[in-house]
Structure formats: C-alpha cells, structure tokens
Amino acid sequence: MKRNEKTLTKVEFEVMNILWDIDGAACAWDIIERYDEPKPAYTTIATYLKVLYEKGFLDFHKVEGQGKTHRYMPLVTRAEYTRSTMQEVKKNLFGGSVKSMLSFFVQEENLSPDEVKELLELCLTSDPSPRMGE
Image (cartoon, rainbow, N blue to C red; front, top):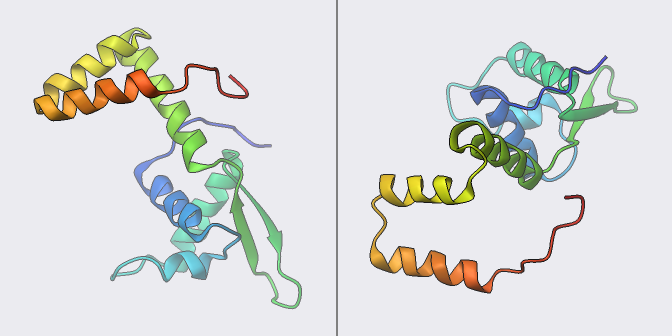
C-alpha cells in the first residue's frame, strides 16, 4: 500500500531530479551513471526507488528479457512537486500569504531595484486565470 507522503528527503529529491531529467523510464543503473564520483551503491539507489514507489512518486514495470530489471517512471512532474511544496511553505511559514512570502524573499535576498521591477512586471503580465485542477 502506498503511503502517499508529500515531501521528499534530500536524497529522494536527487533521485527524482535525475528521473525528471531523463524524461522517461529508467533503471537503477541509468540513475547511478548520472551521479558524480563516488557513485552510490546499487542497493542504495534500489532502496530509494522502493521508498519513492511506496510514497507514490514512482511507478515501475519489469523489462522483458532482462531478468529482474525494473524501469521506473515519475508519477509526479517536477512542476507539480514544486507547486505543492511551495504551497506548503506558503501555508506553514507565511500563514497562507503570498505577500508575506514574497516580502520575505525580497528582503532576505537583497534584490536590486531592477530585480524588484522585473518581478513587478512579471506580476502585471501574468495570466490571472486559474490553472486547470486548482
């Protein structure tokens, strides 16, 4: 039974980023080869893939003629995960206020006047219509 947890640990996020970058089904070896040296052990990646499957982030299928090889594919896009995570941050750290969240980042990141202007222009030109599924 899948746990459907909403958040990823740092290492789970690394594995998901690799899968999102591959943009298709991949086996554990495909993931391992994309790591810098020292590469993680096969069993480590296999464990993380199992956890990600149990959390509902991945699905898999067996590869015909390749023994026990499984190919994993994300069930959640990077954009979907980012959106969900940012909504949680907004809710939990900023009381649901976009204004408070943006104000925090403007102050903490010491944005230049040009960067603030660029953000304002982005706000003024963005499509106010609701996105599908929201």
